[in-house]
Image (cartoon, rainbow, N blue to C red; front, top):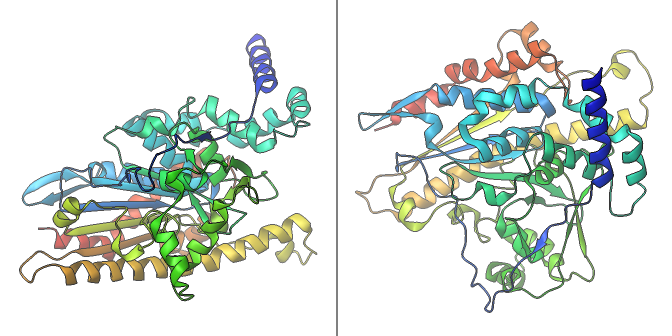
Length: 452
C-alpha cells in the first residue's frame, strides 16, 4: 500500500508540471542551400549491402511483431564473399509508423539494449491503462483546461519519462545504429510528415532538440482517441526552408508529377502567417506501412524519388549491389462485433470501420507502389552503370499475418486487438511470428542465394 501511494503522488506531481514541448527554431543560415543534407548512408560492415526495415501501424500488435523481426535478424547470419555477417548489423534504415514507431524509436536510441528491457518496459506492460490513469487524475484534468495542453501532450509526457528517458533526436546522432525515420500525418496538407531534418527545414525548425517521445506519440495519435500533436511553423525566413527542387517543381507545373503534388502542398509551409501551426496525427492516415512517405519521399530525396539521393552518398551508391527491404506488416482483417450481431454502429464504431477500410486499401496500394518504385530505382541505377560494373538488385520481402497458412491460427492472430495493452501470450506469439514467416519467404531465400 505505501508503494502504491508513492506512485500516485509521483503521478500527481508529474501532471502538475507538464508543459507542451514545442519544436525549437533553427539557427538562421546566411545563404540558401547552405545547410548540409543528412544522409541515411550504409552503416553495416558489408558495403555492398543496404538494408531497409519498415514497421507498420497496429498498436502493441505491431510493436511486438517488429520487435520479433529485430530478434530474428539478430539471430540470422548471412555470408558475403565468404565472410559471415549478423544481419542486424547490416540494417541501414528503420522507417516506421504508429505502433511500429515505439520499437523503431527504442532501437534507434538504445540499440541492442532493446533485447534486455523492452519487453518489460513496454511490450508486456499495461501501457494503455497507465496512460488512461495519467489522463484521469485530477491534476491532469485541471491542466487540460489550458489552451497549450491536450491529452496527447500528457500521453507524450508519460512516454518521455517512462519509456524514452527524456531523449531528443540528437541522441540518435553519432551512434553506430540505423537511420531511424518516424512518420506521422500532417492534417494541414494531407501529406506524410517524417521526423527528418529535411522535413523540419520547411518549419525553420531544429529536429535535434525535439523529444523522441512526442514524435512517437504524433506517429500513433489515432484521430478521435488522441488530439493532434502541434508543431510551430516559424515565421523567420531561414535559408533551409527554400528548396530548389520545390521551386523547380512549382515552376514546371507538371500535374502528373509526384514531386509537383508534394511541392504544391509544401508551398503552404512557406507562408507561416496562414499556417502558423502544423497539426500531426497517426501516420497510418497517409501511409500505414511507413515507406511511401519516408524512404520513398520526395522530401528526403530532394524531389527525385527514383534517384534515392537522400539515402545514398555517391561514393556509397557506387558500392551497393544488394538492397534488402523487409516490411513488418501487422495489418489485420477481423469482423466487427456490431456487424456480426447485426447492430447499428455508433459514431466511434463507424469512425473506426471507416479508418480501417481506408488503411486496408492504402496498405495494399502502398506495398505495390513501393515495390514498383524500388524496381524503377534498380533499373535507373543499372542503366547508369558501365556494362562491366556490378548491377544492383532489390529484394522486397513483406511479412504479414495473411502469410500464416493455418486458417484457425490466422484468425486467432487477426483477432488480437489494436491497443497498447496485450496479454503476455499474445505478445509472445507476435514476437515469434517473424522468424517463422521469414523462414518461409521465397523472396528472402532468393536474397540469400544471390549474395556474392
